[in-house]
Image (tube, rainbow, N blue to C red; front, side, top):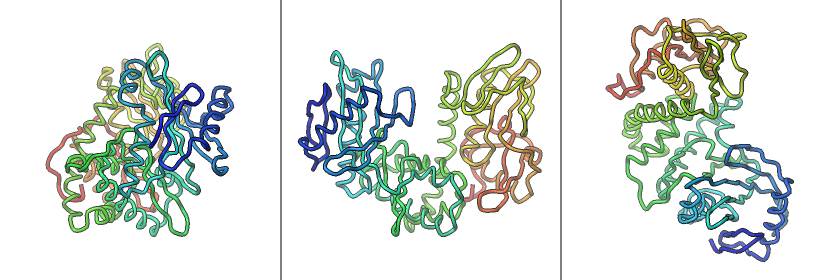
Length: 408
């Protein structure tokens, strides 16, 4: 990385091998397009934006421009430490030099006002024929052969990341690119919340792998074991036990974080209140009318206070993210009841085998109060196998403790 270079009232750093004489005019042009509103934001976040664009130096090709806005005390801290974009460029170069498969950004830019950091940009080459792993995994079900390849390739990528010193605190499938072709490959991206260390501790590795595991909804035991064999070789079963210990601890941290987010206004769930009805509904779906959905299943509970309602909804969301429950459309409280509205058509009770698997997995994360029979429904999963879904988050408590076996 070399720089900074003054361009259009901003400062830019370029990756090694890039020439300011060739890239400088292109950056000045994109800054002008950005100022004139000629670039289309495809992310539309509060502080983040993502623009598609094309540059002509040295050859015409497609790029992405990631923008971060800095506010409050973060403006001074980032001015002293370096912006997210500059640090991400530096990390990507170091990791690529250590052998990690990652597309290195082209340039990072910063704009300051009155001595404080205002905005930063990261200019990245668009990887052709690539899709982020989350979109691919949650799309049409991959074939058994594709699943086997993915488990092995993802395990090898995780091993390479650890060996290169990457501590990725946001190790999730959307931060991995799948480049398809005759020889498909996986690439690590997005090091905004990462650190590059000389060596990772076992606890740091456990945290990384635990976060990846929680996001791979629908992964089977065979998928997970193939991943761990590729990652750890003959220590795969040891790592299985370590991740079984990590899972409820991570669940507890996620629950505390999500409860705080729902109290202050989460991005994906909108708080509402009118007359005797109050609660939350998913931001991408309409608000429920008088506590009743147009269709789908509901769970009606005794009345609870706001704090308990928030905890019940948070547990329902986290169980859905781990593939153990349906997605909650909304939670509505009234003086007489608390009602969870599920994005789930009416389903029969789970078969005994699907219920046993579901309970076994739930007990790997906490404990169930009472019997499981009445609150487990069955639904056909992506592999054509019935899976159980849990409809009673109020009867599930997140807790670390002894589990009944390796499968939990």
